[in-house]
Image (cartoon, rainbow, N blue to C red; front, side):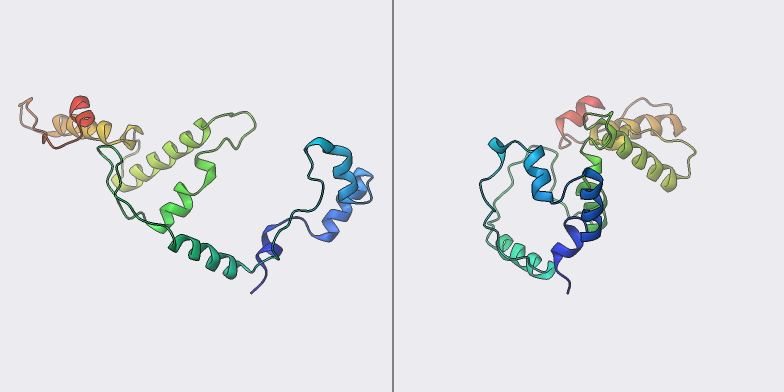
Length: 176
């Protein structure tokens, strides 16, 4: 198995040589000494362990994780412990593109949120076959209110009465 460091860290030697030539520098250390103020540089090399293969690194992280202790969650009402599919974890929740500013003109989380809303709307359109969808269904309360108003518009019954369980989250009840 190839070393993790080979696949994930830094440029290749030829890339580094081309970069230094463009900068007019002979070594990377020399370039850093000119650019990074000495007051914030470490006086010597960091004492790091030897590089590990990706498998070894993952095994070490798994050993650390096994030392964790699980306690009862005291998160607020409306939170339900769930199993999130790996594909969602990798492509949405663990993807920093959704929650970091990754464009130079967007200095906050809004860009990722807009992209998440677009992905959500596209999924709803695919699932329902509708030509358009709205994005307010990202939270429980507005989803319940949308369902209520949609059922009222579709129903043949003239009643304006709706029932909601008193065990629902108080915020959901208030919005509905």
